[in-house]
Length: 70
Image (spheres, helix red, strand yellow):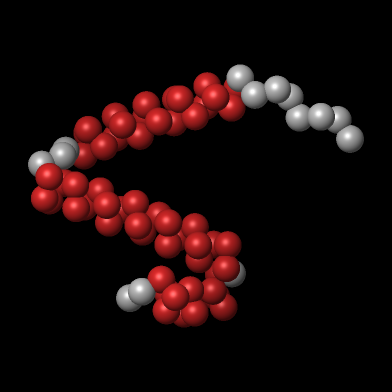
């Protein structure tokens, strides 16, 4: 199923934002599956890379200046 057909089918039930979020999640799952099946990457390597990415993102966000008060 292509992306546009997916959006048309599920957006009425879950809304466009949730449909986009789920499509992105599906894309990531598909990439993981390809890496595992065709490139010899292990699930633990993917999990470690994700943990490292989340750590770096968290550190970057923590280093951001505070939001201005309205």
